[in-house]
Image (cartoon, one colour):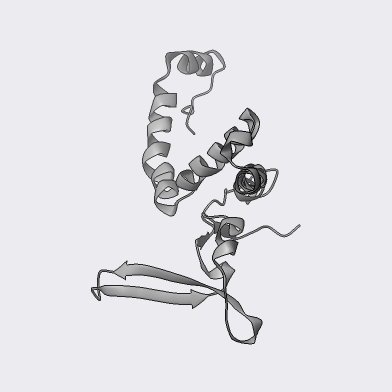
Length: 156
């Protein structure tokens, strides 16, 4: 299986209802944002793959399940269950969802914030150094390293 390089921070199934039919049966999204440099509203009309994604956003350096394991496996399961819950929510309403379905939908909503490019960048820089410092300072870990004659830091 080929690894995915284009990682969506908003899943396609959430964008799909916003597609607008254009000429020659082409479907596009219409995206708008405030362009601060030009001090005016910016706009683009493109297909589903042109919105809410970034190349290698969630790529790992290496992993036995593939470098795209976070996108494909972890968020894939959240998206699949969340899509089912979203569909049921729209069909039968919130009062008819059971606890598991409500949790699946809540997990989907929370995941949208976690996979935003700004959040991912912060996790890769600030949070990574925080975890490294905490690992290196942990007395139990330091003792275990000393007992096993390991001179490297825990974070390494």
